[in-house]
Image 1: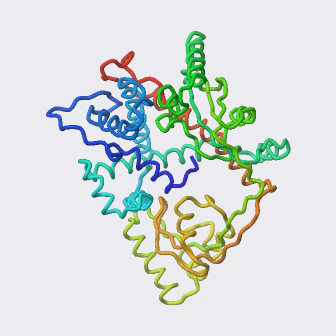
Image 2 (image 1 turned 45 degrees about the vertical axis):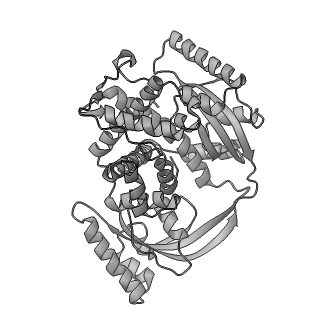
Image 3 (image 1 turned 45 degrees about the horizontal axis):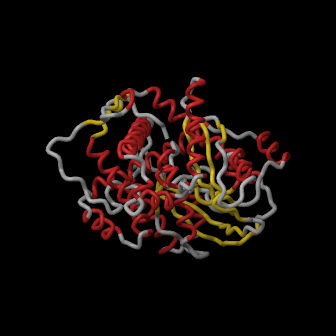
Length: 440
């Protein structure tokens, strides 16, 4: 939930159908429908491209993939959930502008040491449509914005909760690198279904203990979102993880795997890949000023861009004082009266795009105009400083920890809700019960 757009887009790059080295599937004279999702459909060609991409990613280790029919069902379920989320986002007004999409594509290209034209060439060399690639990236960004909106609308953290977290000392130092497998238990599961999931989790653990690679087990058996990435959660602050997983990790040595752990959504198995101390944590903070020109139904992106260009010319070309111009022109209700002053802030305080821009500036520099979902912006970096945050337990850190914990649970609940409300008919041959199983 708190990954930057840059990191999100880079991770997305390897999952776009067809780009990971897979050859495009031969054109078929007639496509077929493998699932109906409300008023939308999933085509066999869409599913085939997903299967080809994942198969290409594991070309050197094909034994890690589940059987072909299981992989198809996993990816079909992912496509179904993608369509449900995009439809809900569009119906609630979530939109990704062309400028935001272009920025994401630029980031994807840069992370792969390409420019955008080279990225396009590489995609088309695989027989893929660049327009289709753009649409896929736009959908992924749309889902990311939907996750943020759901969290903001559903999650509240009270001062009392923060006080309790600080007072009880339920905070962990350090970071953990975990592998993660989840064996799903459906909502309202019967005792028999719970026993079946427990038996499956026990069998997975036995196979890992018997020498099966953890990543291969995650790919083959896990119902978690990151299953096809081998269950790798990467390095995370211990405070970002569910307390039960942190407690289990504390009992493991590096390289060890936990027994199955019962959780709200099923059974969890973790592997402690590594842990590291953060007793000294130097943080760079930024002091900056800001000007915003909002977009709306009455003000197009192009109109707002023209206005922000004129404002930038006043402060850069004309030498006018940034604070004075911000006070006169900025449409940010929180900072305009302060001359656009954002105060001192660190990473993620104002979102990934602001982070990216402010880190590219030197003190005294004014940024080029850039767009977010609220409008067009200018930033002036006033100064930077480095602070050692180790040993400090600030209220905003505690608030963020509580927010992230609640946000993940709320979004899983939201996904279950939109799925239960949707009409889904699975037509993939061999799929059980006419519906996709194993919601991620």
